Image 1: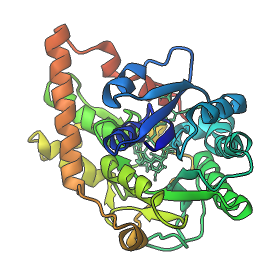
Image 2: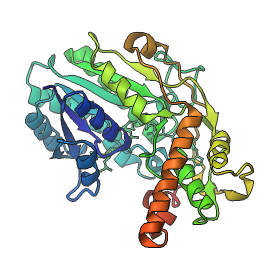
Image 3: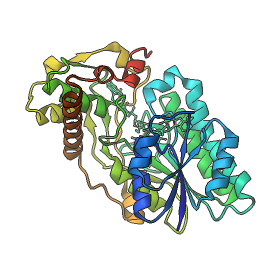
Length: 349
Ligand code: NAP
Ligand code: G4F
């Protein structure tokens, strides 16, 4: 039975990847941080048989311990401060977790794995945010980087470190340069989920409007369930390499609003969307669109869920969740009116 260690198992991708690996016969170990992480029950429900290990990307000894206990064949480093907006407010923490965290996981593998690193395969969750102020369109593996946020800078550090450990120590290390991927499990701080949830609540009369920042930026949005399959495929190759994973389509936030509101029968959403300066960023990534030809040709990977289907899936899931909440409590839960992380970001730069 192959053994996999996942950092960030409580996140969107960690949950989908855990499910995928269990389905493929893996014994799955997941790193969980904090002394009482509220997401443990969800992980245990969705990833049957998972073994959870306490640890933190800012704490090397705990990572060494996790590697010693799990003795992994494959390590997926998905843990990070992943919210770009937060990375300006907590730049040092982002550097420590999203950047230096990669170094610590790699060092834990070296320390606990002894001199024979050839047995372990390592996946680093790199990001299209590394392309930032893009130098060419569409972006591919050879496109130069120009990150626009502390998050993007930290991910660029992690990417180069992954390449360096492959070249220095012969580690089977892959960097997946993944473009935005979403799902009903997406955190409510990200724009897709913020919109799908607000649209559901507006249509049910639980909320009047949604406050947003820049509606002109464009992203290449895919479905997270498709993207974790690409991660797994990277680690099954004969040689380690880096891959762009994307749909090849780009859409603006306005188009996202069109599809999301149309799902609940609202064609003109202008009266429901407010512009709020707090949600604009100090430096924006204007347009992202990826060329995943290499992933298609080498990994045999392609996205299955398109943009419209993805947005409609998210609105439908939020409608069901909000209806269930109302029928359970008789009213919306106060936390769902302005969710925790979103409330955090309202104090953004
Ligand atoms: P996510 O839902 O925000 O999950 C992030 C995970 O990192 C959570 O499990 C979180 O744990 C964990 N984490 C945060 N700080 C940690 C620390 N100090 N020690 C250990 N774990 C820590 O992100 P995601 O969307 O699943 O993305 C997975 C990875 O892919 C991230 O590295 C992200 O930057 C990268 N990525 C994502 C996308 C995308 O569009 N989703 C695109 C490109 C790259 P808690 O639950 O305890 O907070
Ligand atoms: O949904 P977002 O916060 O995602 P962003 O910044 O593209 O980052 C996500 O994708 C990256 C891959 O490219 C990952 F590496 C990263 O971890 C994360 O998963 O914002 C998307 C766009 C931005 O242009 C932002 O300015 O939406 C714009 N936006 C407009 N109003 C907003 C809002 N974003 C958020 N979160 N909230 C708003 O109110």
